[in-house]
Image 1 (cartoon, rainbow, N blue to C red):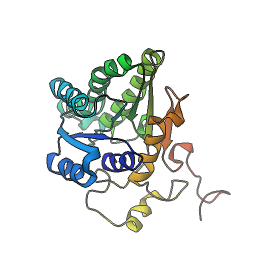
Image 2 (image 1 turned 90 degrees about the horizontal axis):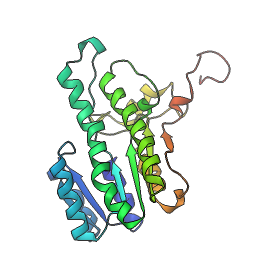
Image 3 (image 1 turned 60 degrees about the vertical axis):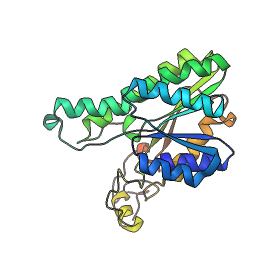
Amino acid sequence: MGAATCRLFVDEGARVVIADVLEEEGQALARELGDAARFIRLDVTDEANWERVAAFTVEVFGRVDVLVNNAAVLKFAGITEWSKQDFERILSINLVGTFVGIRTIAPLMKAQGAGSIVNISSVDGLRGVNALAGYVASKWGVRGLTKVAALELGHQGVRVNSVHPGGVNTAMTNPTGAPLDEINKHYTNVPLQRVGLPEEVARATLFLASDEASYCNGTELAVDGGMVAGAYYPGLPGAPA
């Protein structure tokens, strides 16, 4: 999703700093995008890393108009089978990383009187799901953090919103690279009957980052194919055949 977002932003005329722990992939994406993009290594749990990214961005491009907090990890386990260490690792990357990003970048945006922060939460930040205690807790946390930041920063010209993807065809949810037809068989209870694409989430992120969303602050935008709309009662009217 991050790569798709970078590509779309550059297509729309933005200059982008790609920040990730995956150095080889990040550098390759920056080369693909040309002069409009740069790569810098970022461990989102590391405050010094964030400070370096902020300074680098200002040095190269002069200012920071948009922050997209997209980093996340996932683990499946029953709630009594989670170790404290694993639970804290999920929170550290998914939630604390988002917090440190906001805390680092927001002062730059406040100083210029404008900015947009988009936090990538999840459909699982809008509901509960078995086997994902750490992930769900972190994504609900991102949702709540977004609300607080929207309140505290909105009157200073900085909008803060969250995107809530459903299942999306990425390496996280499809690590074996199975074809879409196979993946879609697992989405028969989703109204749109298919997995989402990274580009679809990127378009939602672009909207919230842009002036087209100038009156959106604290908004939750679900990009989930209708996943949180409800569940089907199979065999009753309105359910898919």
